[in-house]
Length: 143
Ligand code: CMP
Image (cartoon, rainbow, N blue to C red; front, top):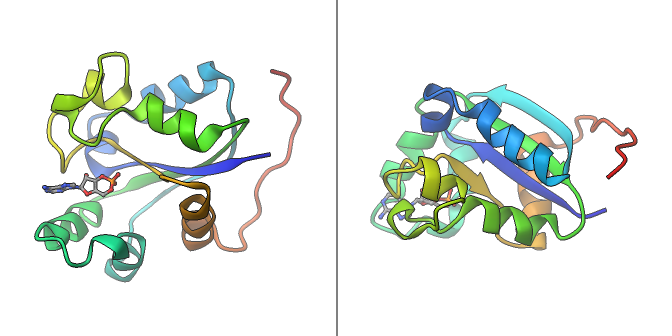
């Protein structure tokens, strides 16, 4: 089954939005197969956001994502990569549709609550980066 990597960013954790985010994906019908509260090291942040290394906001991005705990998750389900991106909404909360996580709860492009893999390839890479060989929980979840 398809998998994606989702992460509640430090602003979402500080604002007490872990439950809200998890609830939306549970209610949609996706299956949570791994989750952990963690503080991202500078090294991990630079690897995770490597594609943005040349952007002017890269330093700010690394500082922010390492500034406090994040809630990292693996979710499973049909077309979960694309559907999760729809549920998250546009990167800029000002352009995100109401009904999406960023449209309903976000305010700024930097502090936009959630990260989600943008492709199957990114999902595989990010799952490996954040969860490596740690065991995912396998269980039945009727749709
Ligand atoms: P994310 O989906 O985690 O992937 C890259 C992140 O860069 C993105 O969410 C935004 O939070 C962040 N980002 C994009 N543009 C800017 C910007 N102009 N200033 C700060 N952060 C940005």
